[in-house]
Length: 247
Image 1: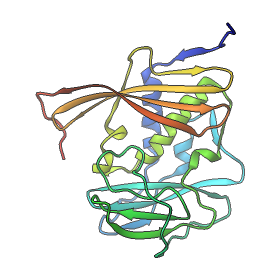
Image 2: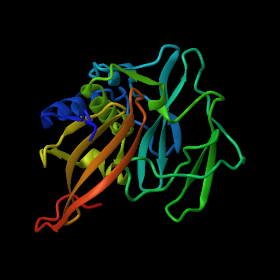
Image 3: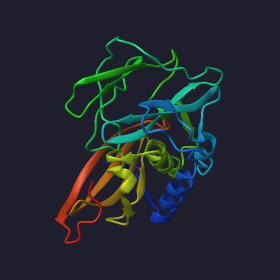
Image 4: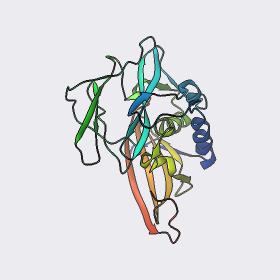
């Protein structure tokens, strides 16, 4: 039987928490007007990237984004653009190719992640409005990242892609990753490398509205790419006597 040459690297939870804390300091200097549905993001994207030493944006591109207020939540939508292309948002009636939920949000409206437009829906799935992106803007931001192919690079990619979405998450948009605590569980956090793939596993707990949920994020990368296929594995659910946060 051929050897798999697979090796697993374990990490301390405080490494991830330090990255999360430092990324969160990239908030803009002024509060958003929550009466306006769409406004420019005030995230300092260069500052958000500084803690990540093993990944970087490809030459010729930059991060930008806008802030979205919708129903019972609000969050920033990060985008990748060519370095010299401005971010100009316009409204359109053109129909995009479908919609998905923002990556960490469990109970919220959807926005499209395909096609040239962002279709915004309310919680019942009814169309609300459409935002047309600049010609070369892309929400699939990790397609424009490079890493050094180390275990740390894949761990950083998994943390960054969630934290950049979570920076401005408010109200129901903050349910999920932004509220979760990373824990040591069954040899995680970890990165497993073989000849062709890297798999990142991060286990978290969420105390919310009378329950404690434990689940594991599992991201699989085709080396050396920084985009991944993600899965969330449910580990446990239990009632919490103290209701805690509930909104």
